[in-house]
Image (tube, rainbow, N blue to C red):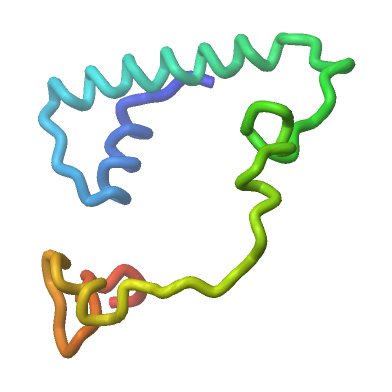
Length: 100
């Protein structure tokens, strides 16, 4: 699957990024290389490789995976929004992403 400049421009638009023509060319080349590498991985025979449920050593048989589910103190609303780039009335203020 080849990545075109149109693909990169569409991705940039969705991410609300403004790219220069040089950046568009660079990212088109880099993304094509990444997709090519993933396609190469798909050529591997993984028939005898068991699926993983966790990406940790031991396949998920680690201490943190078995930790008890216990209630612990949280940050609290004031502390959580204290360093937010934009907050209002104790809540994170974010740009609208759905609808007009």
